[in-house]
Image (tube, rainbow, N blue to C red; front, side):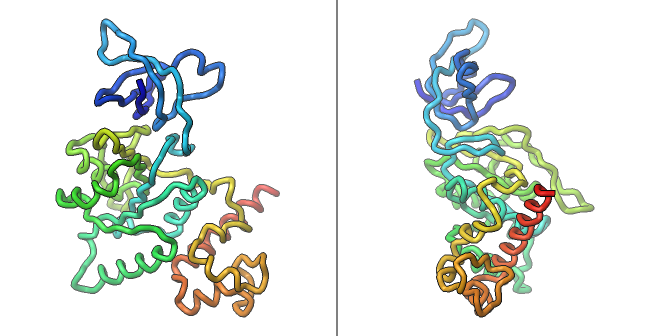
Length: 304
């Protein structure tokens, strides 16, 4: 039979198949091939009766993976859901863009959720200004943006259709409400939630290991504390510009083919001119500059 690994703990793999979850060992042959099952893998398994346990089995074969992430260590991801809060903690756009780099390298589609909308003061225009800036910031990059309160039951009706028929990885900083949102979708307290530190307005990571939860037979969600803070090895200062889709329309008009849109004069750089004319959001460009400088700094440390 075929199934999906939804959790791996202590050498056991838990496989969801036909509405049941089987506790499985991987067959010994995996040690010889150095192939190790990952959470998210589709596998061929056989049920092995056990007098002391129900639903036990053995994994015989791992089906080909369409993608895989190292942190979190999961495979066959259909989409990532990046969750940030509008306040407490405030969103970091360079951090969002760093997460997006990991997804773009792996060609994994992304949804961007902003949570805790109830903390903004609509009467002061704060909510309107924030929504407008975020929409402008990411519309040119082709990233769908959604706004939620996250702890309201009516929000489930808006979120669930976005996840239907997909394996979705939820990621983002601690304290933004990822686990609360997933618990809302599951209808029970599957994920541990944490409170914010009053001193630094940040949360503690409550996710202990990678585990998928089934919303239905073909829809899965996973909560993770985030991607590795390191840049993907495929990213360099020279090619970072290619991962900003909103630059594409203007790059061809730069005077130099090697233009990285940082130190060049505005007269020679069409991207810089587009930023000054409001055609490319300044927040996205400033985030690009920050990531470029961090890449250059990391590279210089390697060569010391």
